[in-house]
Image 1: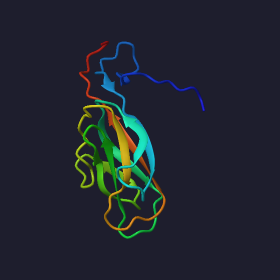
Image 2 (image 1 turned 30 degrees about the vertical axis):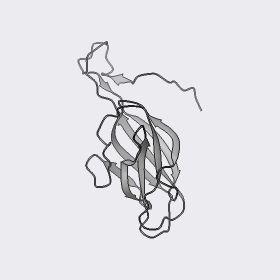
Image 3 (image 1 turned 30 degrees about the horizontal axis):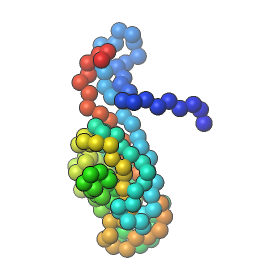
Image 4 (image 1 turned 180 degrees about the horizontal axis):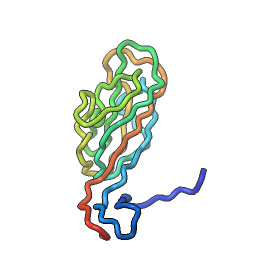
Length: 150
């Protein structure tokens, strides 16, 4: 693996030319979280989203099989934990994408996080869980004023 670079804050892009007239805009980031689809939905994942992050969508790659109508939640552990704030009752055995406004999207999809938050994930308690891991790729950006050179 090549060298990695970590920054505080977020990256912005405004075109490739030195005199580009494009408005600077945040570059989207992706956080991959893999978890056991049969674990409790309050299980801490060790993965964190930063304050100000605005989730645009969540991609699911499921290796979860079996069970009877298995479903899972993805949430956050903050001062007021919310185990289904990102996804609520998503089908455990289905690979797909959840967008703002989708039935399984939680209250934080499309809303800026007020503080850093650890991700929680696992079975939502409805149906019977199967076996296998689920990977969620959480895509997020930040609100930005578009001002050049600030």
